Image (cartoon, rainbow, N blue to C red; front, side, top):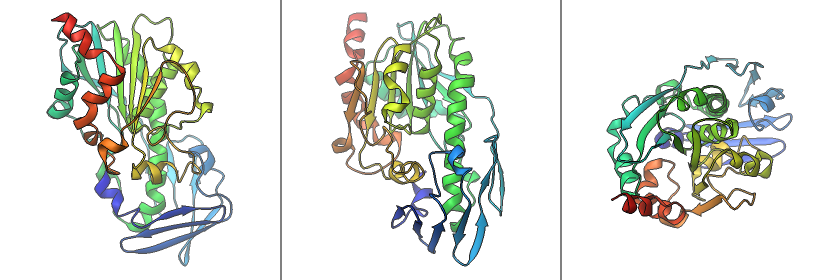
Length: 320
């Protein structure tokens, strides 16, 4: 994802009440906006009137269904293929499952068991339960048209459409999949838009369900950190902790999330702005030491970070 986005957000992107200006490798596109152009998501984008790009004019419209985006020169169908669970490894003794959810442009990862470094890191961190991967249609690099003009506004529209899709996966499909697992307790770990899926799974999880959500771990979460997300309310749907691990220098979230969200920051670059005794914020900026946006950037430090807030190693030693 990082290689693709570097060509889009090279230089700077500045949002004001009237001006949107983004520099590309191949030139500069300036948008003069009648109102605030890019809002908090698909619903706000519907309010946009006209965007002037260079010497041409593009009308930006979004349908109410959130299933297609119409941008004058293209019609993008955003389908909703059902997510599926892929089991990676069986339990080593715990009656619990950990489900990893990857983020934007990860749709092509149909053989996640090959990501050995991720699973080995979780085992070293002390996890003794089953390991699963939740696949969802999070888009892939081939879905992006390699045109600087289209990647400018089109990339943001593509991102916004998949933010809406992440919400639908979390609220509509995930519970049916996860509640069918044989394990009695489930821990979620989500990266980027996968953390957004995890948030909505937590939000919609019934407190009376037979299967219980235990811990929810967010890495570079693409979810607004403000209190209006009702973090303290939704954490009552889990029995353990909500661990938010963030990187203040994450440049993808700084542009692709903050720009369309009117500069409201996600929990992936700042602490969640709500106190609850079971909400734990961990600043990994000094450990990662770069603005890289990938779960791989967290892996060398994940064992240390998880050991600070979760009891996996202590429980593993008791099991042995």
